[in-house]
Image 1 (spheres, rainbow, N blue to C red):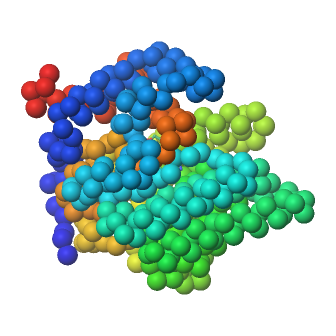
Image 2 (image 1 turned 90 degrees about the vertical axis):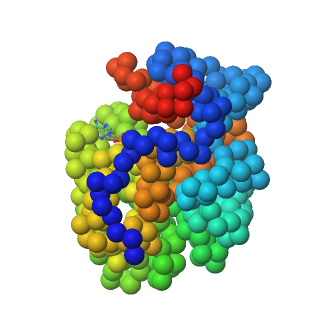
Image 3 (image 1 turned 30 degrees about the horizontal axis):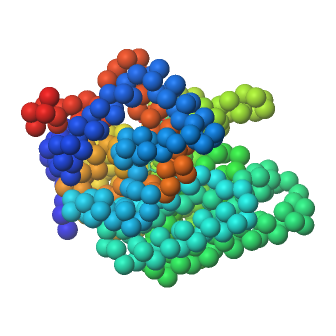
Amino acid sequence: MSKINIEDLNFEDTSIAFASKSDDELTVAYNLFRIFQSEFLVTVGSRLTEIAFKIGLPISYPVKLTLFEQFCGGETIAICKKPIARLGEFNVDTILDYGAEAKEDEEELELTARFLISNLQLAEDDPDINIISGKITGLIRFEILEKVSAEEELSAEEEKEWIDGKNRVLRVSQVASDCGISIYYDAEESWIQPAIDEVVMENMGMFNCERPIIFTTVQLYRHDRLVYLKEVHESAKNQGFILAVKLVRGAYMEKERNRAKEKNYESPIQKDKESTDRDYDLALEYCIENIKEIAICNATHNQDSCYHLAKLVSEKGIALDHKHIFSAQLYGMSDHLSFNLAKFGFNVAKYMPYGPVKEVIPYLIRRAKENSSINGQMGRELALIKKEMIRRNLI
Ligand SMILES: Cc1cc2nc3c(=O)[nH]c(=O)nc-3n(C[C@H](O)[C@H](O)[C@H](O)COP(=O)(O)OP(=O)(O)OC[C@H]3O[C@@H](n4cnc5c(N)ncnc54)[C@H](O)[C@@H]3O)c2cc1C
């Protein structure tokens, strides 16, 4: 069992962070993140990309060479094999993420289920993939999830859709269990989350009796989720299964606040960033305190949260590679956390989206906006890439 001396954990070591990148790849990343520094270019570029795709202009190629190359594994799983193996060389696992967003018709929902199932089967034969991720909105129609969450009465047809959708999720989870590969179900908007929680917790009860296969996601930017985490832990304990949870801060803050304002209800979002950070820390502490009964994924790009987890693990004398503790970052971002944590001995994985360029455009635009300049400050990613470029005498 390897133990940690927290002082030795150094996230500033860019030679480890970017060891997997060639000089050319690093230069491409540097130029891309420099473009992100212009809020104007990101806003206009994002809008033009959306419009161009809608009206069928041939812009796949430039998007593919830039954003797609940085943040996605490839258009097909076969193409992803190379970056997956590359991460594996540095003890970083892959969480395969079919990048398609919410689906509306039965045929598309079925197709997503088939993709997830084939990913699970592929992962079974690949030692570098132990986890895949999925969105419940890819398997059950949004409107059905919204109605169930609001406890609205469903028509006979909708009731059938709800049951078919739940069976679709069950089919995917069953394959995950058969293959021994975990599946992380994302958290989404608060007005569909009660239905997502119901389905995911039901699946967890069925498949997590011996090991953490089905993971739910808890968003700590919501002020009610720390209490929820403790409630589901109690319920898992009573029913005798392992609670498996991916902790995130949350991705839909603006949308949540706008909807609450528009519809005149109390926003589910914390009053400020400090409150989100406080609950995130408390959630980590609670999970580590109960690590025999809870499996966690610390899914964050926040360096303090990574230190916090390391500190908790060190204080408790828990093995770094404990089978209930994982860390995850998105592919193409925060390599300084992923590669340094992995080198230190933690279980680390990168969320790797893949799929046709057209399907992953909304995801890519979110990444560009997330990395664009705030108050003219140099972004964290760019600063690190620049440091490594200087270290290699490339600039
Ligand atoms: C591997 C992985 C998986 C993910 N899966 C999901 C998922 O399933 N569902 C999901 O919703 N998101 C998911 N995310 C995104 C995540 O929720 C965050 O949006 C993103 O990671 C940024 O938060 P952070 O912890 O990395 O760091 P930070 O940069 O420290 O935090 C930024 C986050 O803090 C919160 N915040 C910022 N300002 C305020 C404010 N004024 N008041 C209150 N809160 C504030 C917001 O959540 C914001 O995104 C995932 C992220 C990763 C890395």
